[in-house]
Length: 86
Image (tube, rainbow, N blue to C red):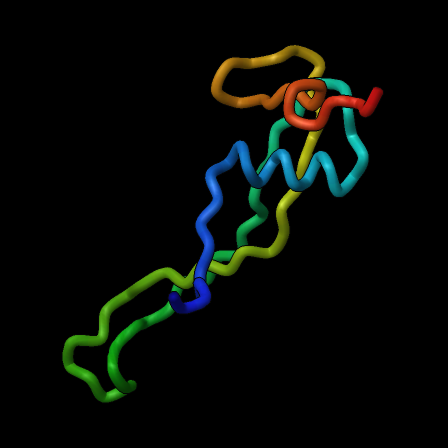
């Protein structure tokens, strides 16, 4: 069997890894993605008659933020995803 060449993670898996990496065990946390957006003309070449306006987006960073109130669908419970070892 071949070694996998790609892995996909859902938001809960990403948050679990980030909370564990930072050693966070308490609180309600959310994460966001900082984007950089540029508007440009996109086509096969500058002379392409099908050149059209388009948007190019880069991921700049990922941020986790503790929120004071848990919100369903928005926050993750650090105590559940990264419980303290006994």
